Image 1 (spheres, rainbow, N blue to C red):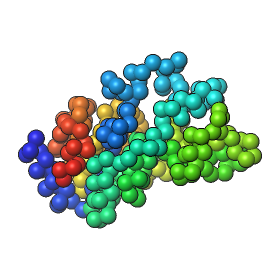
Image 2 (tube, rainbow, N blue to C red):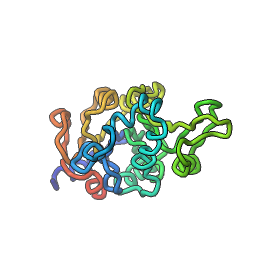
Image 3 (tube, rainbow, N blue to C red):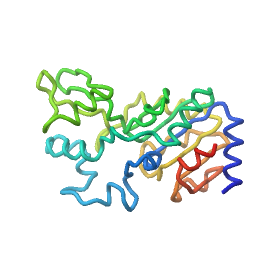
Image 4 (tube, one colour):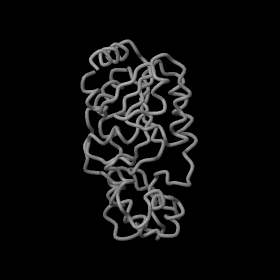
Length: 242
């Protein structure tokens, strides 16, 4: 482990165009449950499977229940960034990090100070009226959704829908294109806190063609054998040592 961390530190020091690709495991050290671990969202008991309750169809047909579930499980507004989020923001300020590409919707990278972020699955801090298009963004917008009783509605009466990608919905093509451009430019790609099982997001790592592909995750992934450096440990614990 010590040798792997020393290699990681050396590569970070030598690289000038780092891109970070992360998933739910990046935020678990902030106290936010992930989806697929033994204590994750998918192991909990709900009236319907979580993937159903977070689907576009469920939003359309069970709107009030969707918002109850969304507010209870997907709005971690009171959590703070951990060592991984903070280190990435530090690397960006130092001019070494090109971008963060994240599957998370919790906004912790923004809270830590990162600027160039591709939120592949959206963020709880962006919301829009489905009737008039009015934006409810930032903390005020998120609090508007969280504090609403039942279905959150705009002044015009329309539903204020979170800008998060639900099951059955496609990813934003501009966001994907930006993430691909960043990954193609990278001289080092760090993948962290993700099982790499959610597509199309996980497929974006194929665009990296360099020789410093680092994978940091507690459990093994399908890309372990493709990585130039693999570390099985909590990512915040590792980043705190860089």
